[in-house]
Image (tube, rainbow, N blue to C red; front, side, top):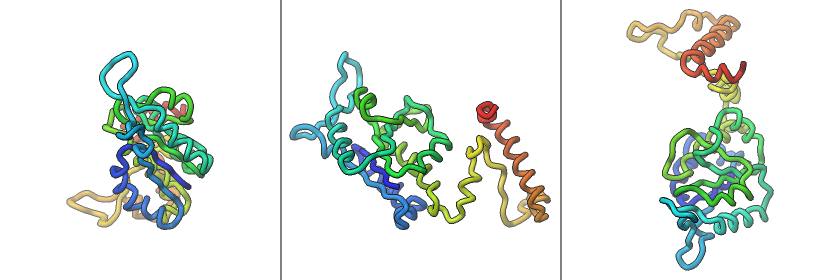
Length: 227
């Protein structure tokens, strides 16, 4: 998979993509992540990428011309399965979306700033808009990093135990059940006896029951989505 990201603050993305699972995916050649500095496409001597709003109002708006020039150049080099705009006023990222995107070959991500991008960018170039939550960040770089992490870890071969990713929270609209490891007792707190029996069918049933219980208590809205 190749992921291109258009950003006005590319340095913000250096650390998230050079450690842990993302680095492993890059080292294995399973994911290629390229950051493009939008200011390279800015207008005039000052490489302008934003301007005041038509109609007045506080805050600057990212201009269409630099973004369009960058996207057009990248589209000459490859076809993109999705051109994604990270913005808080969009549908919230969920596991299903991550699963779907992990099957794509080429993805282009545009990170927003200021009051957002000129609406014509969204109308003409964007194929999917994604939010990571009902709050506003300084810019879309960290949101893009969240999306990339959620997607790349699902690519076959990235995680050593692929079954682990398939049993994460939200894969079947359920939260994960409690998990335990050594020691079997700590400060008087014991691991459930069943988990020490080796009776895997019963353990699977217990985990399923616990997953439903936790989901009902913490995120009942997920159960509503499956009904």
